[in-house]
Figure 1 (tube, rainbow, N blue to C red):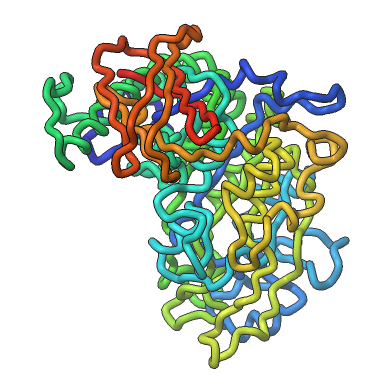
Figure 2 (tube, rainbow, N blue to C red; figure 1 turned 30 degrees about the vertical axis):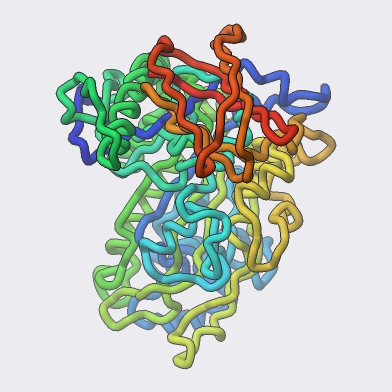
Length: 542
């Protein structure tokens, strides 16, 4: 992100960041054994290739180059000339022989350092080829057969809400988004609703607010209506978002970049991420975005040429990824960062006659970083699958996208099986993704599943039967239960652990509303006792 002093954005931008956490306070809780690596500062960086990247012109299956050429006579990456493909690794077996698009010199450099793993044929069962629907499936942790993992919450939100639920609330967001003026559904959690802060268009050095139009002063009387609920949510969000100003600004101002980055939007997004990480911002997941991959036409600038729109996008991607990792390595931060790319689907195997490609199914995924075990997972897709009878689609999925994410959440960040299953479950096969993790995705010294158990949580405590909302709240706090219980006991503690409220209440239509207007602003611990079971919820009073 280029440095510019931008104080306010329009209300179209969003900053939904309702439950930040103090991660440093919990370092020891993740370290039960002396031989466990320190995972307290580990972070994921996600790069969204929006529009559906053409995998076959990104990584070319050299063992089937003749079939590839017949399917793409005018847009193929040439085998000779100045813009021929880059040979990835001559030591790989024949069915893994890959030619990289000539734009991907930066990825070749990462691969040669053993910092890049290429995942072949990534997708999900029953691929949906709508940009909007498939993006939602990727972000909610579902596939094309069902929405059983939840349609209104994102897998990242569910993961963070469960995995970091016992950590102390602090004044920075758990996740940061850049590259789109909308907060991603992927970070929408069950109780906290959103766990990311979108700083698109902001100058992080002078970050203030991305919600405007309320005149700076929240309304005194909020009506008891749908409109009132929405207005309360917006004002609460605005108030809490402003508390992040100091931590965002301080991290940006104290951080640095050790190297020069390309002059592009994606590079500037990753440059900002690097500077926030360098400045010790506690956020755990960063998501950036590069768009333009919906290449129905002019994918190349002319027949038989590799350069063009797609080449430019891949150049930006590769150069930005390489610069980011070089920056992290130069600052001795590379051990704590793993990144990956994802795209909502791929493109057809056959070109479409307009120097482009139409919507397909599978697509490659790049996992990168110093902790990553370099190499290739899977074999080249079988191009003979693509025939006129199936509209020239390659349909065999070698890796479900959730396998990659699940492997990283457990083997790199340390989540236990229960957390992974609550984040996303394979309802199509009725199986857990912990049973099909990707072997050797990480170097052994970074893989905490090898001789080390990082999580010491009691999985039974992660299951919530009560929803406490809105969070944060201003006057009224609601309790809604999934259990058919008529009366509950509840206690409210302040942030110092002092009991300030001890009472019982009647559940009417599975809901109890509490008027807490008299409380001071701050962080509170809300304890619910019902049916012989106790639950703990952290809430914020504005």
